Amino acid sequence: MYTTIEKVYHDKVNHGRPLRYDLHMHSSVSDGILEPAALVERVAEAGIDVMALTDHDTTDGVKAAARAGFARGVRVIAGAEISVSWQGGLLHILALGVDLRDPTLQQGLALLRERREERAVAMGERLAASGIEGCLDGARGYAGGSSIGRSHFAADLVARGFAKDRAAAFRKFLRPGKPGYVSCQWASLESAVAWIKGAGGRAVIAHPARYRLTATKMGRLCEEFKSLGGDGIEVVSGTHTPHDNAMAAGMAQRFELLASQGSDFHDPAQTWLGFGSLPALPENLTPVWHDWGHCAETREYRVGRTG
Ligand SMILES: [Zn+2]
Ligand SMILES: [Zn+2]
Image (tube, rainbow, N blue to C red):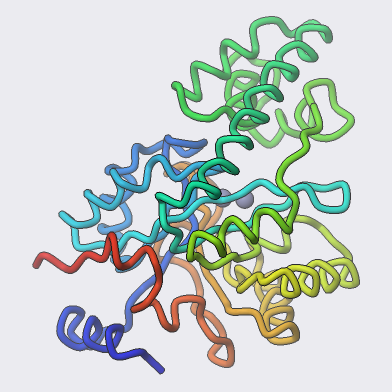
């Protein structure tokens, strides 16, 4: 079941206990609350052995996380969550185990961050036109110099009493058709997969149930993704229901995709499942980490337990 390197890690370093993985989470470098080092601290406290930092359209927090991981005995996988436009909707594709120095990946991510910034300006203008002034400045404050997203606008709208909570802010202002919504042309599925594969990583469809696709359309997505060279699908997500996990497991099996798991942690106050409380992957699936002795990231950032 394990490659040699993985097995050594198991037996010698981890005293035979199966490793625990969380391969989807955000730091303050995108829209998470915690700085990378503080995030790693929490991950370590929760008993996670291997984590991937997957900030939106950026790998800028990975080095700080890897340093903290080295000190705390958490293996940090270099990742990102790439925004993709597909058939008129937004998808998230996780990049796992990429080489941070890959120029094509970094240029692609930089382009998406530029588009994100342009969208933020346009969102601020639209909200101002509907009578809500100053939202862009407020959102920038919450982003704190990091790449700006809808959740930063939501935070400002909640703080100023325009919505009672984050979900209401999205519902009233930030969804398609609402006054603060601005559509954005993100990466194509083909480009996102090519950037990830070119950087030696694995491409994984994040939280598939969140896109609310019909079964037919979900099948089409998996088929296209697989044909483009995509590797896996997030079967267990902190934002999924057990039913959603089962749907994703079915897709993994049908399209022979590797299975991943992650909390999608953003904030200690979030309502979905956090670190260490995810259910196990179904045994009949092959985990995305099954051969991770060999991926690009581990050569550069492989870390061991300190204690
Ligand atoms: Zn996502
Ligand atoms: Zn995410």
